[in-house]
Image (cartoon, rainbow, N blue to C red; front, side, top):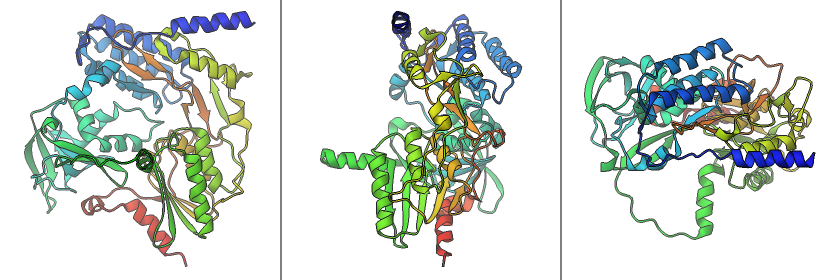
Length: 502
């Protein structure tokens, strides 16, 4: 048996070595149609052999038809962007947020050297609504913050957003994640879906609600400095003056500042704790949680706002830890966490096949349903923390970016009598998702990279598999008036509720 395992291990070492680079690569270069068709067929084969939830929301014959349409539409050579769009369009129909398309490493490496002109407005979107958040042109006095856009170059908002939505993968059928992603970088997704224009005819509503239009030129990032800002979990960009030389800081202070970007804890003047966590992946969260909840206990704080609107997930163990500080009963991660294979099929084209093989054999075993289950996730119950457990009122702010492991947290505590979820439907599915280990497929001709999850998680089999995210207890999303005034409506709602407590 040891000899067999050694031979199997050696095979994986020798075969899991597909190159992710092309020799003499030229940015966004074209690839011949026959080669791209080969990539389409190979991608379909690999997904069918390894993806445990390929047909969870889309029947096989329907998904087959999407692949066939993409295959038949390739009649001539395509640029990497053009081919990426075709692949992403198909992948989005799987309705799996962890199955995502990335550009080749060569493309990504050279991207900064090829700064194309951009659509000149930052835009917040929800449903079919599009509202101006800012302009790249500092002298733009017409399309002010809060202006409602009704069309761009003759295309309606629905036409524009539907085309962008087709490029983004998400769990099930909720579009809140897609809207948030597009709002975070509208210029990128517009350019990806609709290409470049030298000018844009913008239809909009003026201050009296009358339909107007204006033509604005595109914006060249090479001629200005851009920095990111954040408003109500919306990352936007604005043109700024050149940044002065950075003041030198110690390594310790630099690490502290870097951590503060991803998590923060404060107690405000109303004796309300505010815990903000951008992911469950990094920045010594175990010590951070312990310190934060210890302060809450020592200062006898009765109200806590947990802001996970931008938390796209991370490690289950870290999510579990936060849950243990808040939840009032034992809980487990899933009713089912299982893969269809312990060894990646077609490993030559899949990076980290060896890692997956090792971890899968270490953590899972085959059961009667012929799937490989991670038993600990299915059977182990985590108990609430005894030290520094928070028993006061908890207000969780969630939105489209609340995803994956952060959805584990919200779904576990939802319905608890002292917990109120404020915001929008989460981007992550409430019934389950497909994730855990995420090896990457590298298509041999285009070198596109496709993230492929390997374990299907059903959090609670008693929940309805309707493709929806965790629903808030109090619905609250962006409004035109809120954007105009720069109000963080979700945070304001939480503080209003706290102020009413006697």
